[in-house]
Image (cartoon, rainbow, N blue to C red; front, side):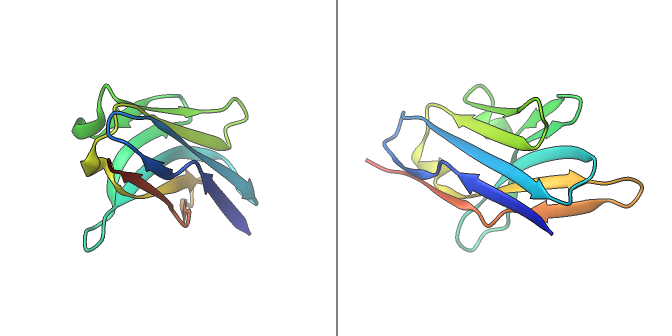
Length: 118
């Protein structure tokens, strides 16, 4: 069994900051990459930020310079520091873990709500 526990969502005013965290536990072998996606009602889940086991990061254009993704030294926790939040950042944020080789496994967290509103 694999569990992904997300935390850190909430309500914040425009211009504010939040930090999301996701801890992976259970029978996960060789995490290759971790990522954060966002999903708004009626829309598909889209990538916000991605980090590989080697530390390479990828960001959606809309969050570059404002969001920072990072992993802890143990490699099973991924965080997303979100600064200068905008109303349009409101969504449910899901953690994704890609693990295994040669068979690749993908795991998703339940999501944490981020609401940016004045």
